[in-house]
Image (cartoon, rainbow, N blue to C red; front, side, top):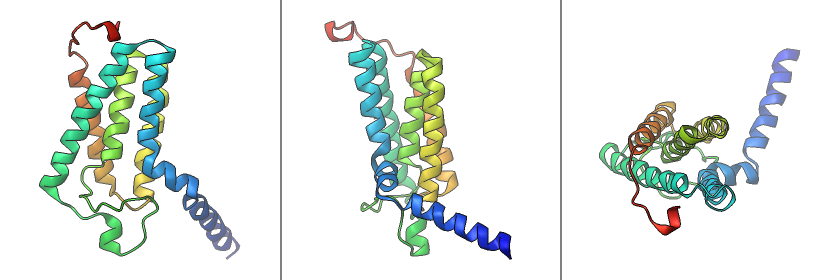
Length: 171
């Protein structure tokens, strides 16, 4: 009984933490904030503009594909099916499959890791946290975030070999 009571208290604490406004914000907008931070860091701080452009190109392609796939499958989100309140903002009732957040997070992690191994590893950890957070927030099924991870990684690997035209901004 004592163990059960202790586990209930721990679960309540975890739910309180997950349900906090900061976690809610990060679970809703975190991946977009992460892109902004990484892009600014690459473009202005490290002056790795070609890498920054690769990040954006891969994100646009992966995000577009994810949105097209969402239209094709039209799978209702878990919170809609279960009738519970999600722990992340999702006023638009788009399809659950695949996870756009996971797609974008893994696209970013893969693209950066192809150029900077250590930074890429950190971004893979963050991408995994984002994916798990989307499942815990009840806006995605586990398969949605796995598919998003596969899609994002694949697009990043395919776009890596794109040769960008030489432009004065990308030097």
